[in-house]
Length: 219
Image 1: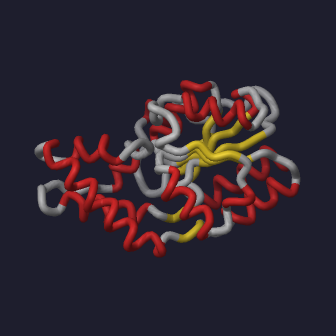
Image 2: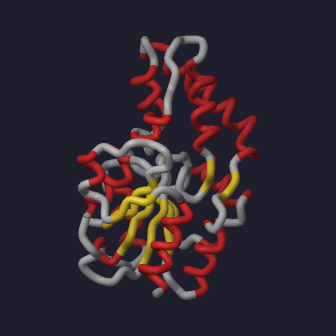
């Protein structure tokens, strides 16, 4: 892992597992979705999250014919329990400080726009993030960098001027494909060496990532 090639002018965050502590709920929602059909997700599933749920549900189900029903179960469970999601300590303060210092910040998430808007409003993040690209805004999904590059352009930067922060392999691979250096939050999982090799920094927690963002963009 090398140092950034040039100073950074903006930062882009993933949402789930990066700004919002939603991983336990997401895991439980996936488990609920799969329950009638077999299959049990583990923490390793988070390496693949970042796109529409029907894509990863097909990989987890014994028979993909059950994807529509499993998807309905997942969405209903999440809707009933989304109030349990909380922002990570330091997430809101970091975004507010970036805004106060006129450092553009965006969000690149695989979530659909409706649930993203609900969560941002619930946690007071809607007015302090400059731009958001969601999973249903474009036909492509992480790790395809199209959404990331669209967001970089909206922030008025070149890819090399932006730092990306995420917690999934698809965040790192998308950042690498788009020429955006990435901070990977590993939480408690083992990172594929090939993924670790193309991220700029690997940290254990969101709090460490926020500290690195402050150090890199705010001095």
